[in-house]
Length: 125
Image (cartoon, rainbow, N blue to C red; front, side, top):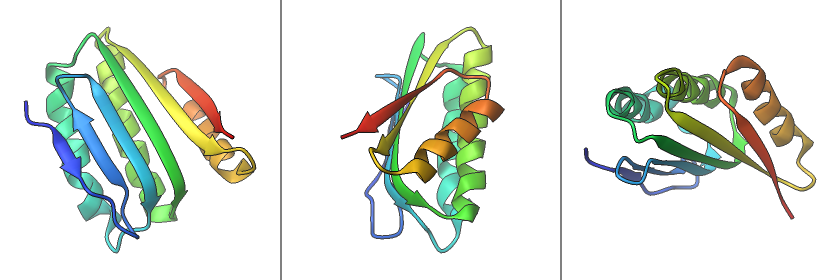
């Protein structure tokens, strides 16, 4: 399965999905003009990956900011990861947030309350 690599811009996050390593990473800012269009390939990739997922999938989410429309799309990404988890695969979501960024910590906790996948809140000092 091909990896999905998208270089980040001022408005879109860097994306690194590597099926061979069982790695899913999203880093940076997420304020794309069209969130659905930006996130669709990510959700589609995870749909395919869920059928042949590695025994362990490591997810690193390190967003400095995301807008409202991105939040729904990020939830869609997590729902695909929940499918992987329900197929008796290990999935750990590492949610990174800046030391003084209460909003980002809260956002991670909100996702954790919706998705049935273990989250690790990791503070960046």
